[in-house]
Each structure stands twice: as structure tokens, then as C-alpha cells.
Image 1 (cartoon, protein in one colour):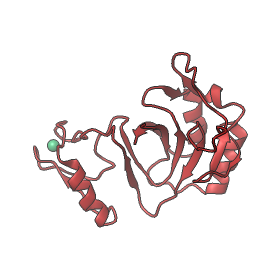
Image 2: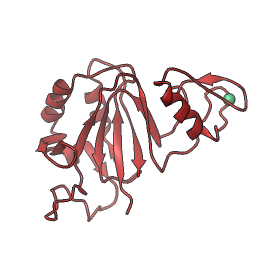
Image 3: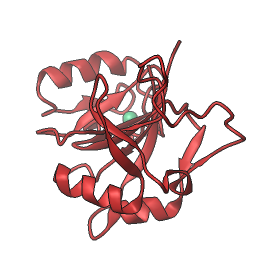
Amino acid sequence: MTSGSLMFRAPPDSTPVVTETERRLQELGLIGPPYAGEQPGFLVGEHFLRLVTFMGCSPYLQLEPPVDGSDRFCHIRLLGPYPYPRLLRGSNTRPPRCPGCRKRIEGWQEKVTLLEANAGGSTIECPHCSRHSTPLELEWQRNAGVSRFFIQITEVFPGEAVPVPALLEQLKGDGGEWDYFYLTD
Ligand SMILES: [Zn+2]
């Protein structure tokens, strides 16, 4: 059984302080009490369903830990900050578009793997127009994201839920733009 996540990415060059971010997310009511699962996280907060809009009726939306002890329910994890911007991708990630010629870059997985071996410090060459782009410059639509810090909302499938604009504004605060995307296993 596959699972998916709604991901938020911080402005790619920013390195939010985790404790400060936690405090802000708690004030917003996006996150609630800590959750000690396989990977530590947070239960959803009291305003979660006002900040994230689920499409349709989502009758199976599970917001509490299931009795079987699994962590297959909707909760929140903070990922990072990482020492350099990371590309997070999943089985839903499709070939990105080159910002120069707009064509899709097939074979991107091998190119990205090579980059990561180099700690993210290089570029991918477009096979169509030879433009060199960092992963951040490539266009991933909402199927991957590049940043040093992410918020993950688990058990959300692509397009199943979207953040309200006010949430992205609140995340932005005095800093740069946040954005969101989806990942599936
Ligand atoms: Zn190109």
C-alpha cells in the first residue's frame, strides 16, 4: 500500500530554527502535541482543518494514532534544516522541465544521483539546449521540492488536500516564499 504526503518547503536558502518553527506552528494550530512514533513528529493541531483544505468528504481521514500502533495516520514531521538544499522526490516525481527551453529532462534520476554524490554542489545539463541548471532552477511542478527545511503532513495523497493561502502567508512571515508539493512512496 502506497502512502503520500503533503510537503511544505521553506525558502530554499533559509535555515529555520526548529524550536522557533515549532513554536510558530503551534501558535497557528497547525501542529499539536508531540507524537513519539517511529519517527518523531506532532499530532495535528486544533486549527489543522482550517489551514489545510481536504477535497471531497475524505471519510477516512484519520487524525489520531490508530489502535494498532502504526503511524499510518495524518500527522506532521519537520525535516531539516539540512546543510545544503535537498531535492525531495517520490514515485510521483516526473521529469522536470528545463527553465531555458521548457523541455522535459529525461534521465533526470541518474543526473540527480550524481549531483547528490557531490553534495548538491553542481548542475544538471539539459540534453536539449545544454543549459546548466541546479535542481532548484528546474521546474518540478508539485511533484518534488528543493529546500533545506520541510514540513511533512503524512497520509495525504497528491491533490487530496491543499493549504489555504493564509497558511502560506503565515509561514512566510517576514521571510521568503514557502511553497508546497506532494510525494508518494
Ligand atoms: Zn533546455
